[in-house]
Length: 339
Image 1 (cartoon, rainbow, N blue to C red):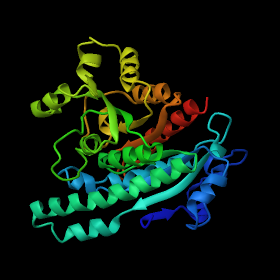
Image 2: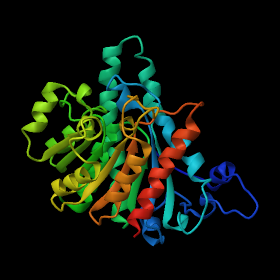
Image 3: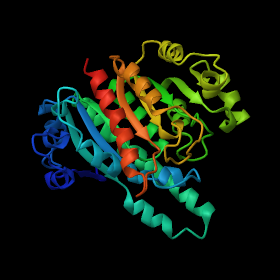
């Protein structure tokens, strides 16, 4: 785990805003003391959830997208640590691991700013390295008997989440993706638009359901590929929210049925949520409450093996808003899964 930076007690204490007669989440959440024997430390701790950040936007660069996904973790952490510690939030069930950091890759890419095609080619190579790091962390968390919750970065990291889970379980898995896009584009080098393609081609992904696909932003070529694969199914946003041909709840049931009792991961791409600053921000999308209901529904199931929230692009004007949204999604997952 060469790129893993553990969160420090001083970092947590500097973020917490103390108030009389209040207890904050950050005061009771667990952390690790050092990088030595991380697996053993995690195994020995009485926690169920391990939360970590992925601070990168290399995958988005490799997909010619909007940078800034590396900032989502900090926005999230500032809010999460300051929510109330109470019988609803149960911070003692969670450990904050720290972040996977890839600034060195971002720095190396800058020298290719004047040669976009070369920059994209280099970025796609770097994504392959990021894949290995993410998969290793996820595998280690699961091996220690905990559930990984990953925040930040591009949707390229779906590949590492799926691979790490599949390797631990020694079987291919399912995935339910709350997303405006399929991220099932061609195998043209790794980027944020083809994580599921590679995971499927390499045998890590067995069943795949896209929840809320946007019809205006899915190519005919991708649609044809999705339709010819029985292992993949989807429902469009327009069928649920515009034409009202399908019901949100019944389509969650349909997605679960498609998993066919296989273990699965929960993927949340923030570009599916209306007006959330993201790498592909949309004026027409699901509400935040829809995403919360979605997580609450699937997190209750024993087959749910991880949560991955990605593609948010906060800035100084909206980081608290984005951080609150992600914190709601994470605490919803923990509450539902703990039942």
